[in-house]
Amino acid sequence: MPAIPASISRIESRPALQPSRSPSTGFHMFPEFLGDHGFTQTHGCRFAYIVGEMARGIATPRMVVEAVRAGLVGFYGSAGLKPETIAAGLDEIEAGLGKGAPAWGANLIHSPQQPGYERAIVDLFLARGVARVSASAFMQLSPEIVRYSVKGLSRKPDGSIAHTTHVFAKVSRAEVARQFMAPAPDALLKTLIEAGDITEAQAEMARQVPVAADITAEADSGGHTDNRAAGPLLSSLIQARRETCELHGLNPDDIRIGLGGGIGTPWAAASAFQMGAAYIITGSINQAAVESGLSLEGRKLLADAGPADVAMAPAADMFEQGVKVQVLKRGTLFAMRGNRMRTIYDTRASFEDCTPAEKTFIETALGESFEKAWARTSAFMASSNPRELAKAEADPRHKMALVFRRYLFFGAQWARDGDATRLRDYQIWCGPAMGAFNEWVKGSLLEKLENRSVKQIAWNLLDGAAKLSALQARRASGENIPPSAFDYRAGLFD
Image (cartoon, rainbow, N blue to C red; front, side):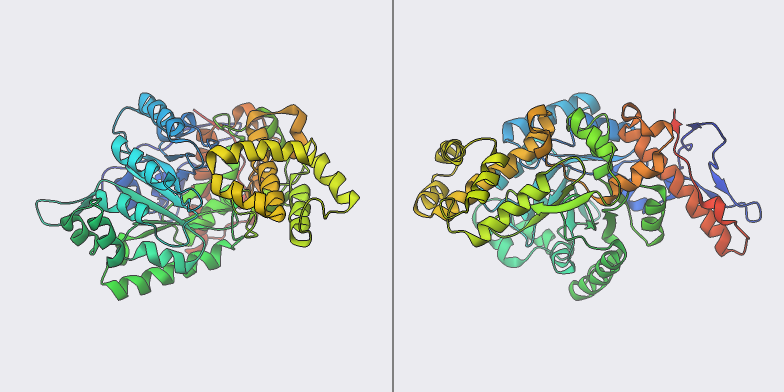
């Protein structure tokens, strides 16, 4: 193993336990020790820590650059953006880090409702040499995520298989994880060969390796989430890895399982590593960082949140299917309004079928008459999805759904833009980790928004996790460690 770099230094009012050391055993614990060393070696990062991809540009190119400079892995929140916008973001990242720099990637979201979009983004990533993709919202493998994975395979001189493309599969269910842990199905490989997307040689290599070597267990997170508890989810995926590798003759040590969702304090980070997570990923807490693509108004709302100030609301992209996202509740009416729209959709055949009170509610939330909202919606759909428009014109209930979807979509847009006139309609994806973080940093220098950079957030979590892990190791070796020792105060680093 290569030499571990010198640990991070810290400026605060009292000396930090850094590195943590046991007087009786001489045991040292650096933040660099946390997680799977194969992860840091493979991806060229200093710490087993990912700054996650918050969609539609909230995880900005600047955030990615600063994450990598801090020794972390950074993912660009490219999901939902136009290809030309994503390309501009890749330009910005390459300008900041240099072409071919390690430890960063971009998001690929499964988009069956947008035919051709997924392929266009994979084409862009392959053409630009994006070496890491975080795959989200996949319930089953698509040809495009398999194509991305397989296109990066080649033979080394010794006959082993090398990877130049790396898939990080974000999952919350074992049945989905198994698909990524296994080799690509023959049927998909044959389809890709017939289309000329991959070669026979690449397909043969793909039959010997998993689609994704990095599996991210997504627990109770902001945005799309199954609200899974971290412990049961991680253990479920560990069992799925063992069974899948036994079935396909793979080496389980070649598949790393990381954990995200609910990680907003050193205690949560330490718990994840103690459970065996190869790496951790943070999301909600980075939305309040100075590099975030969220508006200042939105970041101020996040800074006031507590652990219980979140709620589930309908998802704009899967409104009719009843899919929900976890959002900030404190300071906004978005969750309440979105859920009432869903109830109306479930019980009414059309806007005209609504009661006077329901019509008033709808138009108050929309900020305009239903007719004006439909005119804007239909104008957009005419160019983007004529088939959906035709369906809505023939089905008044679908027409109502499209108008509601537009409101839900713009809730996130207003939050990013900082539209003061729509403050109460902000949709801010947020999990309980945000509130836990706020409670922890209260009274410290990290309470101030201007001090919340991805570097300061991550290094505090990592330094604290190292201290707590070392204390627990000392306690497990027989030392009497007082409960108060397991406190950790946030501060600022060099």
